[in-house]
Every structure is written in structure tokens, then in C-alpha cells.
Amino acid sequence: MATLHRIRLSLSLALTNLRIALLAGYSRLDKSLSPSLTLHRLIAHKFVWSDITYPIHLSIALFWLSIMRSPSFPSKLLIPLLYTIALLLPLTNQFFLPATPVFSWLLAFFSNKFIPHSYRPTVLVSLLPTLESVLYGANISDILTRYTHPLLDILAWLPYGVVHFTFPFLIALFLFLFRTKHALHLWARTFGYMNLIGVFIQIIVPTSPPWYEVIHGLTPASYSMLGSPGGLARIDKLFGSNGYTVGFTHSPLPFGAFPSLHSGNATLAALFVTHFFPGYTKAVWCYCVVLYWATMYLTHHYLIDVVGGVCIASVFFYMFLPNELRGDAALEYPPNYTPAGFARGRTARSKYEQYDLEDPRARLNAYSFGSSPSARGNAREFDASSEPSSEDEELDITGTYRSPVPGQGQTPKKSKTQKHPKTHTHTHTHTHTASIASLIRGDERRALDGDEGWRGV
Image (cartoon, rainbow, N blue to C red; front, side, top):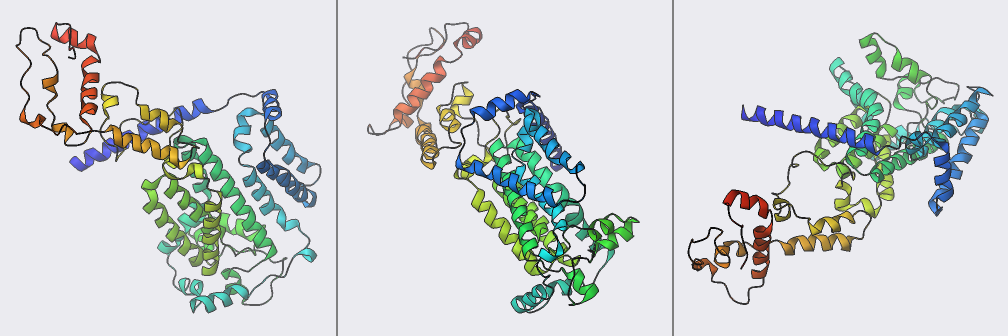
């Protein structure tokens, strides 16, 4: 019963914090629909070297739009028109501008099929199975696909065919609700650029996946060939649908086995969760392990593809992670969000909270985001120096103050526990703390005691 009660309390607290975070997130949104406000911000913006990425994205988008045949001209002009409108409105600009690398990746993934075959490199059919046999001693993906079962199919389908497409949005939502906006922008940049570079690698070095070896062997591949759902065809058969069969058969990039962006996205999500939500580290890496297996079990990737995806995700995460989001700064809440109750692992209330005083450490912590490690270290040093030692807590401070009740006699004698060396350095700290306690909320104590309250000597 006690365990069930704790679970109910934890669930109730989590739902309360989610409601608070949703309200705080909504209040942080820029709800303006005035394009003039965006133009004013653009004029006032001080350009830096990193802004050069936007002209690069524009050039890439113009290239893909120029070769795009479906939708045809002039219908395809709706794509840049709608995106421009989204950038002009402050309500949508706050999402679409940081997500520019993501849209650039999606455009490249969809439009690469319009590249003329004569300009495309030869598909490497035997490269991946050969490397896998040389590096790992066997074709691991082939071994994992020899035994199939409906339960294994479902276990592989959930991370590969469901969670993979929803997890990035879930991570973005939680970063928006529970972390600073810089963490959300970091996710958009890292996720978008990693997938964009991954697609460029798949275009420049096209490789066939395991399902091709199962169907066609090691015969040369042609860009006119259709893709295949691989093991996901069993899912369509199990549920009586054809969604995965249609989707993967007409994939814009059927020969993009290396690197595995399924494993890359899962690894990147795990690194973000580990860094910004460390309490869920074990769960998210368990998901990654299952997805790694699923990519090979469903005949969509070789083991070397999975390793390549893990490597590219790790490189991009640590390359893009700024110093301002390392350490304790990664766990900072948004400025207008305060969780209900005390999170697990928090210590008891400090003396400043007990007496409703401003904590000087709060001013230091307020500048910890974006500050140097030395500034955050000074805050921690202040915290350590302001707390009394256990030896000081034995001091009987009643000997320093008169009784609040008149006529109660003289000041009591000091107890034996007061005998400390005269050279002790923390005696003043405790006396000062007691003085604060004696002066705060005097009106409340007068009402309770019927006297003029505590007075320090």
C-alpha cells in the first residue's frame, strides 16, 4: 500500500508539473502576427559569422527547387512562399527559424530522387557486406534475420516504425517545457545538420541495404529499381495494411544504407536525454539498443551502418554542444517555470527559505547560464562557506539572548557545549543567523506572545 501511495503521489506531482510547464510555455510564446515586428527585429539584429549558414541554406534550397519535378512549376513555388510567410509572422518565426536545418534536410531527402541518373555515382552493392565480414568476422545482420517471429516483429516495429518518427518531436516538446530555449535551439540545429550531412553521404556514397542482398543477391543495382519495406512487410501483413510497403517501396533514397540515420537519430536523442534529463538515461539507452537490433532484424541496415550512425551522432552532439550548456547549466529550468514540490534529490530548505529572505546565491545562479565556470564555482564556494559546520550546531544560542517573556529571570547560564576555542572561525556565522531569526516576522511573534517580541542583546 505504501508503494502504491508513493506511485500515486509521484504521478500526481508529475501531472501537476506538466500542467505548470504547459501554462508557463504558453506564456513564453510570442503570439504576435505582425510582420513589421519581425522586420524591425531583423533591422536591429547584429549579424555574426554564424549567420552565414542562412545564405547557404537558401542556396541549397534553390538548387533542390530547380530540379524538383513534382510538384511542378508554378505549384512548387508555394514551398518558399509558405516558408517566407512563416518567417515573417513572429508566432511561427520562433519555431521555423531555428528549425531551418531540419527543413533543409527534409527538402534534400525528398528532392534527391530528381537528380539525373547520369550524374549519380554507381550503387555499391558488395561494399557493406564485405566490410561487415572483414571487420566482425560474419554478416551479423544476416544472422539476426534467420529466425523471425510475430512477437519479435512487433518488438522491432515499435522502435523502428513508430517511436523513430515521434521521438524527435517529444524531445523538442520536453526541452521547450522544462529547459531553456537555448537547449531547444541546440536540438534543432544538431538534429537538422546531422541528418542533412547524413543524406549528403548517402547521395555521394550510395550503398544497398540487406533487403537488396536478400532479393537480388550481389547483382548490380540500378536507380530505376524500387525500394522494399524489408521485414516491415510482415507488419503490414499482420495488421492487414500496406502503409510501410507503399512508403518504403517509393522511398526517395532507397540506396542510403550507410550511415543508418535511424540509429543516428536514436543515439542523438539518447545523448540529449542523458545530458538534459539524466534521470531517464537507462531507459533511453535501452530503447537505443532495441532499435539497433531492429534495424538489422528488419533487413534495413548492416551492423556497420549502425556503427556509422552512432559515430556521426556522437560527433555532432559534442561538436555543437556549447560550454554554456555544459554542467549544471544544462539542468536549468525556463525563467518562468518553477516545479511544484521538491524534486527528488533536493536537500532541505535553506535558512534563507525558512525565514523568507533573499538568498544571495540566487543572484549568482541567475548569471550561471552563459557565465564562465569560475563564476559557477564561486557560487558553489559561497554556498559551502555560508553553511555552518556540525560543530557549530551544538552551540546553545539561548545564552546570547534575553527571554521574550518579561520577568522570567536573568539570562540562563551557558551550557557546557558552548565551550569552544576562542580562535574558532564560525562563531560569528551562527550568531548572525540567530540574529536574523530573532528579527524576522516580529509582528507575528508579538501576536502569539503578547509581548514586544524577541530582542537581540
